[in-house]
Image 1 (cartoon, rainbow over the protein chains, first blue to last red):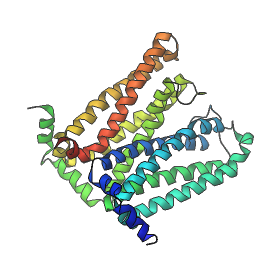
Image 2 (image 1 turned 180 degrees about the vertical axis):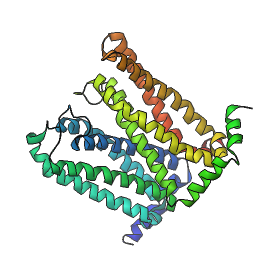
Image 3 (image 1 turned 90 degrees about the vertical axis):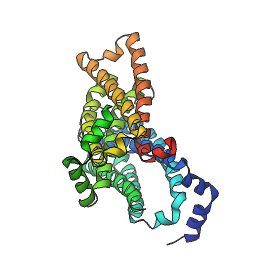
Image 4 (image 1 turned 135 degrees about the vertical axis):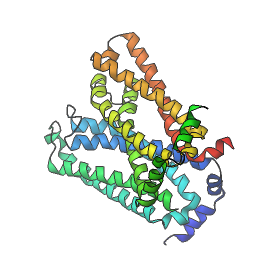
Amino acid sequence: MIFTELWEWLQGHPASQYIGFTWWFPFLESIHVIAITLVVGSILVVDLRLLGISGLQYSASRVTRELLPWTWGAFFVATLTGFGMFVTRATAYVENPAFQIKFLLLVVACLNMAIFHFRAFRAVHHWDADVMPPPAARAAGAASLVLWIGIILAGRWTGHII
Amino acid sequence: MVLHERLANLLTDSSAQELALYLLGNVPGLPPIAQTVHILGICIVMASIIMVNLKFLGLALPSQNLSEMITRLYPWAWWALPVNAITGLLFVIARPNRYFFNPVFGIKISFLVPAILLAFVVYRMNQKERGYWDHTLGRRISGRIVAGLSLVLWVGVLMAGRWIAYSEYLFY
């Protein structure tokens, strides 16, 4: 595994040991759950709008603009709490297949978001109020839905392997 | 005997427990899959009840209409909550003593019941009268109080839900 020394150093840090052996771990874990359900809940609303399923009386850009700050805020909290849990057993997590799949899916989800943002969403003024957005936007919404469900599944599975 | 002890006794060594244990132990990946479905149900509660509560408090979705949001979003929660009851009960039935004799599970349920009742009241009044929560100053204020209380209760449900597995940190 690459960066083995880094993972070992992180794991050996007194703060990591402290989290791992005290109530800090379940505390971070419960905040992580609140954060990820807010991340995926808000993404779900945007995806369903892009798929032309729900929230159709509002334009796609308005739904996106008003929800994404919540998504990013919660994502930030999920990253911090996730990192706090990760360092307690970093060397085991990086070799955990569920954890690896989770991060692979996160990268794909980011790419999907970037492609949507710089392509279909760039021309949003052409289709903003349309009940049924163009195929590229629908595809991004569908992919996002599947990817985020996969990320939750792989994340939850991580705890069953370690 | 108190209710939770009766329920625990009723389920212990029952055929329902046998079935739940068999399914969890023999269907490949069922525990994480059922937990994921449970978490997705919470995502839907977040996108519906929680977002509407934040809207009540003037914190989210400024350009959407409150009454319309309640009508559109709450039915999603009415589907998600029964699904979460099923996925949750699978684990409770499999190991009744782990839950019914766990004070954290008791806390979760005692937060969950009023949280659902509040959500139901918000929905019901809005269905009876469109814009119910917007029509008078008194209702706008009560709506905010209900929303604040509901947020606290749901955070409690989520925190307690995750801490069921760690109750020894709190009680032993």
